[in-house]
Amino acid sequence: MLNWCSTSYVVSGPKNNVRSLYDRIKCVRNKKWLGNLVSRLGVEWLTINCRGDWSNLRMKDGNLLFDTQTAWSRCEDLEDIIKHKYPDLSVWFLSEKLGCDIFETNDATGEIFPKRVIIDTEGEEKEYYTYEEALHVLCDKLGLDPETTSWEQAMKLCKERNDLQDDAENEAHIWVHEVEIVS
Image 1 (cartoon, rainbow, N blue to C red):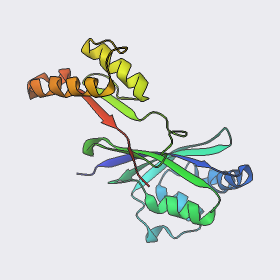
Image 2: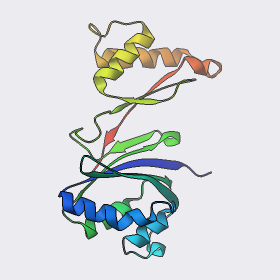
Image 3: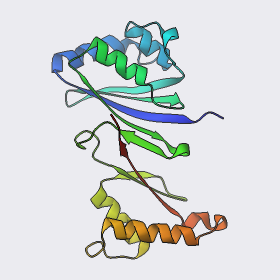
């Protein structure tokens, strides 16, 4: 069975070069297959793994943003192609592979993707939070005071609570995933 990896990209750098990249790829934004994007960037799509699609191309605050949904992992080859064609641009990503509990970013400072914690409970939409926001959410769910509870204490109590639950009580679990910083 295929495991999908969802990745959000932000490309930043000199405004004229970001705009040049946007202008280059906007003509294939309605052709969702990843191979169309790769080909538009001047690379033969057969040379890389193009298993997936791309969407949501847009400009925001001088940055280029888009998303991919790819098989097994994020498409690092796509990142390399952009960096090769536009060496003065930075390619930032936030990638999640929920079924394998993989959440990662290359934004070490949190400037581009500041929300580093995912709280996932049965019956609720998973959501990204900053550590401070996540602490408040966890304390609310666990009946604790966020002013007197540390992150470590909340995580320990959450784990203990989950360990006490059996599979039949899955709706009571609170899954907390922290985004890993990768290069």
